Amino acid sequence: MKSRRPLVAANWKMNGTRAENARWLEAFLDAPPACDTVVCAPYVFLLQVAQGLSGLDAQAGAQDCSDRAPGAWTGEVCAEMLLDTGVRWAIVGHSERRATFGDSDELVAAKAARALSVGVRPIVCVGETLEQREAGRTNEVVAAQLAAVLRTCSAAQLATGALAYEPVWAIGTGRTASPAQAQEVHAAIRAQLAAADAQAAGQVRLLYGGSVKPGNAAELFSQPDIDGGLIGGASLVVRDFLAICGAAN
Ligand code: PGA
Image: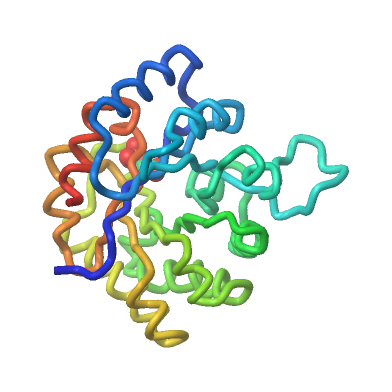
C-alpha cells in the first residue's frame, strides 16, 4: 500500500472549445473520481475549467508557465495570473515544448522555480527520445533534466507539485512503456531525489505519461514508484479519463 495519494492529470494540449469543455465538465461532475485530479487546459479555457471544478478534489492546471514576473513580456502568462484565475498547477517541461518551442533544461528549471515562488505547483516533465533510449542513455538524460530543476528548486518544493516521466517515444504514439520499463525510471528518479532529501523523495508523486489508456492504466499505476499519470489523448474522452482515474484508486 503506497502512502502517497494517487494523482491523475489530464493534458488537453491545444484542444477544446467552450462548448466541448462544458460537456466534458458536466460529465466529470456527474461522476467525480476519488483520486486527486488536475485538468490542464489551454490558457483561454482555464477560468472555465477552474470554475467548473470548484468544490471538487479536482483542480485546474495550465500547460506551461512563464519564467518571468509580471511586466512587458508580450504573449507570456505568469504564475500570478494563474493563481488569480484559480489555477493551482502548471505543467512545465513537456516534451512538446522542449522539442518544438525550445524549452531548455535551464528554462524548464526557471519556470518551475517561478511557479513555486508564487504557490503554483509544477508538474515537471522529463523523458528520453527513442534514439536516446536505444543508445542506452535513458537514465543519464532523465537525470540531467532533473538535475537542472534541482539547481533551482529543492526536492521538498518539488514534492508540493509532481514529476512526470514521459518517454517521448510513447507520447501520442500508442506505444506505452512497459510497467517494468516505467518503474525502472521512476525508481531512478526517486533515488536521485532521495540523495537530496529522503523525506521529500518519499512524498513526491511521480506520474507516468505516454499513451496511458483505460486498458493499461491499472498495471502501470500498480508499480511501486508510479503514483498516477499524465494523460494526453485519452483525457479528451471524459469516460476514458474517468476510467483511468478509477484505475489509480
Ligand atoms: P498521450 O500524451 O497520453 O496522448 O500519449 C501524454 C502527454 O503528452 O502528456
